[in-house]
Structures are given as C-alpha cells and as structure tokens.
Length: 117
Length: 112
Image (cartoon, rainbow over all chains, first blue to last red; front, side, top):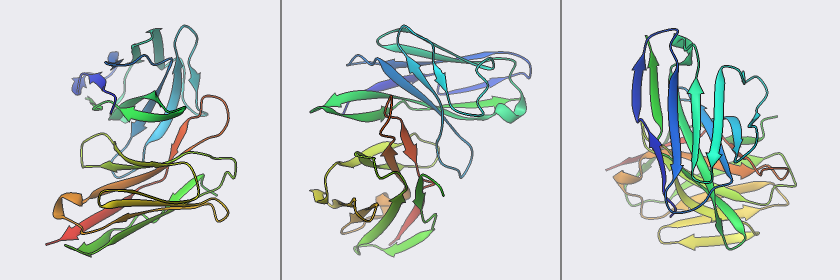
C-alpha cells in the first residue's frame, strides 16, 4: 500500500509550549490529508481535514486556533498543537487518501504520541 | 445514534476458529467501507475495503456488505494469535471530502 510517514513518533513537551507534527505522503500526492486523535481505549476521532493550498476544515468542537494545520504541498501536512496542556496528551494520527481504481483508500502514518507535562 | 457502531468486545476466539466481527452504519448514502487492524500503541493498518454488496475475500479475511441492512462484517478464518488486535470498522461520509468515520473498535483476542 501507499506510504505515509509521520514525525516524530513520540514527543514530550512542557505545558504551555507548542509542538509540530509532520505528515508526509512518500510515494503519492495527497491533496487531502486527515488528522485524528485517539485517547486510550477509544476510537479515532477526526479532528480536521487538511486541504492542499487552502484552509483546513475542522470538526465540530475542535479549536482551530489551538490545532493549527498547514498543508503547503501535495506531500506534506503539519499539525501544530499550540499552548499544549496535559489534556492534549494523546495519540495523533494522520492519514492520506491514495486513489485506487477510482475509489480512494486511506493510509495512516505511524502516529505521534504526545505527552504534555 | 452513532454513525458507525461496533461491539467493543472483548471477543475471545480459540486459535484456528473463525472470528466474526460486525459493524452497522447509519448513513444510507455511504458507499465505501473499510476494516482496519490496530495493534496496541500503533496506528491502524488497512485490511480490507469493500464497496458493493456481497462478499470479498482476501486470504484468511472475508468482508461482507449488506447495504439494505446497513451492515458490514469481517470474518477471519483459521485465527492466529497474531490476529489479536483491535479491529476498526470505517465508513466514508458520502459528502464533501469523503471523510472516514470510525467505529469504536472491537478488541479481539485469539487464545492459543
């Protein structure tokens, strides 16, 4: 399948600081990428849709000023968690759609485990 | 009603048996359905996709879709301990960017 690379795989930061997570599609171009968050023993919750060259669209209840998304190229989207707090500690996962016979399938990055202390 | 519902389990199956995982969805307009496997601490891995009614087989895995009943299932034959994981059902929202919506996942344990 298509390869999506996410970096870093884990990060620990102090409360109040910002953290940037990168998501790259390595062997295909992705005009749309998605950012998810997963708390322990819960499912993936879609946070936002990242659109190349335009503003991201956020799901209801997700603060766009806190979770900044930039999709500057067809292979890179970034999520910046600003002024992080302990409750932002979670597993953040990106995905990108790769066309397959006219119907797209989503492939996921390795995920980033964020711990805010 | 949740968009995608799964039995959270845990589901325990003896090694070599068939594991059956079920999922229902609420939006009749959905056209694309996926099963992902997620090991603890890892990101989801695509196992199967299915787009039309009926069965789709890939190795030990069979996905079944019934759009009239808004039901999709995954069968794992000859279950192995390495199949122990959480299985996530995902459905495309039919509008806009075709976002994937996930069920809560079913935790499957294969007992040797």
